[in-house]
Amino acid sequence: MLRGQTIKSNKPVVEPVLKGRLGSGQLTLKHLVIIWLQQFILMIVAMLIVSWVKNKLDYSVLIGGMIFLIPNMYFALYAFRFKGTHAAREMLLSFYRGEMGKFLLSGVGFAVAFTLVKPLDVLMLFSAYIAFTILQWIQLASIK
Image (spheres, rainbow, N blue to C red):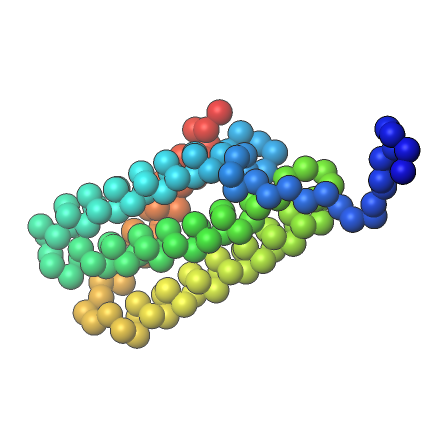
């Protein structure tokens, strides 16, 4: 090989991004960790506040928050592994697989909660799940 010559390859360049930026936007792993910590702290605070009202409400809120948080953490870590135009196919596949895993983890979380947790306040479980979903939308919209 001559000096200055480059080797061309048919393989796409795939750059893992978990150490730095996630995707091509402004969302970084640091942002995700901060969002997850905020959601976890709010989940604990909500659980403590609700526990004064009724005892079974506190773990219903905790379970609803965990059913939301764990699948979303899985999705974010799985889906945003690649960046760059050369990794478009890998990005798309990781988004599909991340969303499928998130869907399955959510379903398993609800199934486990309904079958193993007795007594369970279903209204508080779904209220916590929906509240954390709305909270995440607001948090992601505020990142500039």
